[in-house]
Image (cartoon, rainbow, N blue to C red; front, side, top):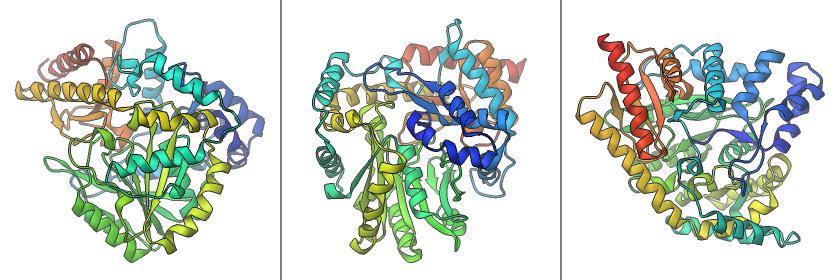
Length: 467
């Protein structure tokens, strides 16, 4: 699951607003951004970036909570259970900070680590041929005077045509990441105090610091498969709601929207004047048909995806928005979005010029990726058949899996114990699941490492259950 991140330039652009919200000098914010800027992982396409979660935690720890932390806690506090019901208590922010800090130290340490949270295929012996990437980047860099915008828009339109959605190139807007694209759409749609409905459990939506929009969770429920809770969405929509965010397949659950779900969402959004925002970053790895919101015509809809899922390059710095729906609704949006994107989150020119080649050559890599995901899913299913001490809450796509380990099991404490044994897994509460009973694992690691990590997890759980 790709980490939410910003380019250093985008983070620095927000520095004055962050400083004003926290009543500190802007130089302190800029210094913290510089401190937390991470370098390239692949050394080819990935650009320096700032991890949003670590930045927010550092801001809270050093400069006081401010408004951003309040919104994050509100979102967690309003999470409903997997089958609906009352909101659950949010995990304490120190809990999240403790796990995040321990995990970071483990990744940076000298001790070997079985990392079952990894989100970058290149770190899992899954990657493009370096020579091919070098060729693509060299070609993109060789024409600095060429914008490449039209070619990138046409490449995205061709990609969507392959998924059964006809979108004109002029309706495509580029962004550096899918998270940035969704945040940009929320900013465009929501004024101070207005709301956007977001799924839970899911990757947290990181809005720009100082944004006045509120996120209101709706439920993804599990009844043998992860499903959209339509009643939860209908109940959550209020006079202040301006957009509904969906993901298909969703991370980490793998929930996949079917035709019935999309018809319901289209009708709801059309009736209430809402925008439908579909994060389809992992649609290429769906296990079944994954119709796109870009094919909807009854409401204003925005498809969002990126080179992270489509090409397996989380740090490529290339994502896009494609607008669909009635022309009277799309035209005003397209008059605003390109201007806002250039001001808030401009895409790197090299990434923009490289995007057509990346989309055109991705199939060989995707074949390897799909095989890896299938192998590790089979390992989890086999473990369940031999009565491993967890249940697999099966999804229909994505790069992650949710494991249920029993309501009495404190996932936070278990994950810290596993770290002491050289195994890293995510507690479910990082994604809005209850603190007790749920873990999230990445399906990307090499199969032998994946099995080794699961064996350590099984051993520790059996020790806890049987002594």
